[in-house]
Image (cartoon, helix red, strand yellow):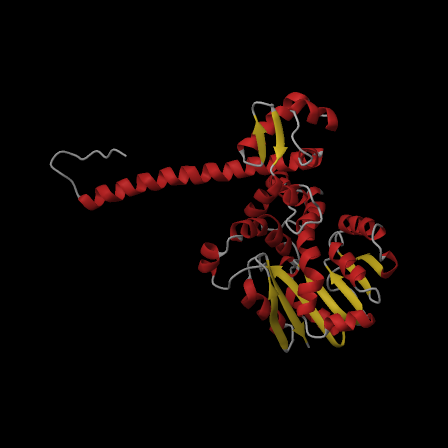
Length: 369
């Protein structure tokens, strides 16, 4: 990179700083271009999943015409989409045969909905970032409030699909198994409450894993409960599942396990909600809290947590505005970490709180009276 030096010489440190800044700007342009490309590829992934294109590509080499015919979609647009997928490194293109195929390493990510790595349907959450952008701008310019239920409906099913693979992989054999005595208690027949159950994937998995246990799921969002009831109807444990519309601090009973899956940080009054859960625990009962992975040190989290950008941005658009729309408005955010969650449960009166397990995406906490 050429650097111009004025006649009479110059301050070398200034020249070095200028050269360094120019290089940094060039690198920053590349970084932003990468972010924009990622957003574009994400939108194309959502499109391909919705049209069923990936499943066809996973079957083997296929021409653009054959793919468009099988899925009853426009051939010219299909060709453009395929070339974009090839350029993104998701699809392989054979120029001689003029065929495309899904690279096999992408099948468990974009096709197999039961794989722990499946991400295609969950990517539709990103659609909501753009669809509700005007509402988030208004929240920034006012009191910060944007209720969960005010978002476009693609958020609710998309969120359920985003979390479902992790729940299928870890919930029963890792997360519940990491809690002292809970697996045995549920095998013998217990009562479970899933607070903020969303579309009900977590509730269904627990009920199916423990045939002697009954599960109640509650969520304040009617649309999510409607979807949860659809998922319950398709499960093998529908007679032991009850999905209800309700606030996180407006239920009563005696439960062996009360769960909060990726939701407590979204709530306006997590201390009050945790305290209410404590009052509804059966003797020896346990609270299970699953939260996004985060380090307690903010600077370290920003630099070392690979998923921090995704979590902070999701928190900006969804989690924090939702909390600010409710009473108290603690606004913990999705990256509150163990220290933030421990503070909530200590304020709520729990005497036992520990990190029980973790994954690259989540931290699992156990709390008891």
